[in-house]
Structures are given as structure tokens and as C-alpha cells.
Picture 1 (tube, rainbow, N blue to C red):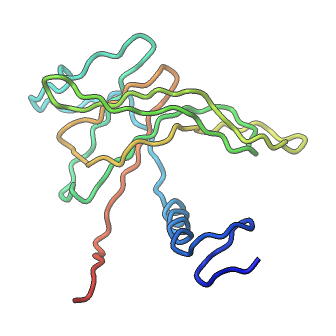
Picture 2 (cartoon, helix red, strand yellow):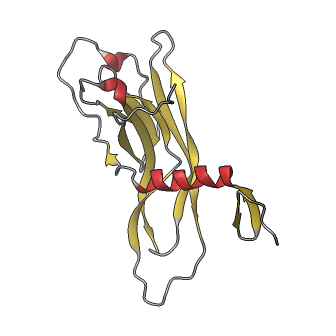
Length: 183
């Protein structure tokens, strides 16, 4: 099969070069992603007089409220936060495992603050046979992440998750490199 100039092939299919480039960029971006940190269980903050806890609803039965207080940074406009919800489960160590579901955003009526509610929908996996004698491995399996959100140290990030699940987060920082066009 002849390939037109400027086209890339993948498994016998033709793709314009412009479509193949963003895919390569995503692979490179993901390879350098920072590790997520487990959120601490409702960390306490020194009283700042804001009484933010009154604004957020209590957790419903079977759920728990996780509160993340981000530390203040002098350049908060350069930072973003990504929320990851999942749980540690036993896997075979060979197959890729993920969790379905979504993290939706809600607004506290009368306050305007937002919070997140995680709704996991089960675990899925590839189905390759592990080698004989393969020992089980515990791994953090997560839902698709939510965000990135603006970094704001003045308000907590509040996430409601089902019992048995945990919340992790990633902090992303913009680089100081600016890209522009010459006049």
C-alpha cells in the first residue's frame, strides 16, 4: 500500500502526520508526570476564622469526606491540582488494571464553593495469562483523574469517596518557558 507524503502508518492504517504528532506528545507528557501523593485523612488546619467546614455537607452513609489543604505558594497561578480516586487491590502483576467511574463536581448552595463526589463503577483488567508461579501484587488502581484545577491555598479541596477508597493528588507546575511567534 503506497503511503502519501506526510502520512504515518499504524497497523496498516494511514494517519496524517498532524494526527500522529499529538499522540507522540501525549506519550511524552505522560512519561514525565509527577507521582501522586495520598491525601491525608481530613488534615486539621490552624484556625483562620473562616469556618469552612460549615459550608460543606457531612458525608452520607457509606461515604467519607476527605479534605486536602494545599500549602500556600507565592506563585499559585502557576500551579494546578489533579485529583485521583482509587483503592489498593491485589492484582496478578501482569495485566493492566483500572477502575471505571467518574468524579463529578458539585457546588455548595449559597456559598459558591465546589466539592467533588467520586462514583466508582467497578474494576476492569486486560486478560493475559500470568506465568506459572506469578505472585499477587498489591497496586493502587484508580478511576480517570479529575482536573486539573486552579491551586488555591485559601480553600480546601473536598472530596467525598465511598468507604474503602482513597484520594490522591498531583501538583502540576507551569514552566517559565514562553512560546511565541516572531513578528
